[in-house]
Length: 191
Image (cartoon, rainbow, N blue to C red; front, side):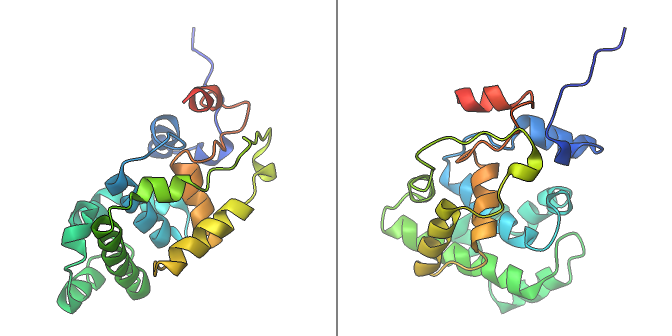
């Protein structure tokens, strides 16, 4: 007898890689600075696109962007930008490529100041947890994501608007936006 499929958030249905991301990564609390830096960069590349577009290219992004090591990435030059603009495996958007390199410099500044990116981002966790029964109830922007965006921009970061920041908050577990009926909701809530 076949087992019933697990109830999931509807956005990941139809693609095994998307389901794997939903089931194993999305919403899991992340505090590692380098992993968070990678997420900031990838969410910037995602602007105007679907996350599956980025997810299917994530390994190529990691290869092309020095595994998102901010110290190495901050050293990229104009010739690296040209090389990346020719690489069909990634999103070839000059502004987004340059923003990732620029943000590596901002990340290096945080490191020089002994400021944790994790602590910086997690200070915007909402005071109260929210729970949503349906995906269409989930906001794209919140007061917290506006404040996160404002703080990152104040520190010179690029491609960190409030919608991008909210997607970052969702992906890294700063908020739990699995719908209540999703099998991951109680697991993430317990984390």
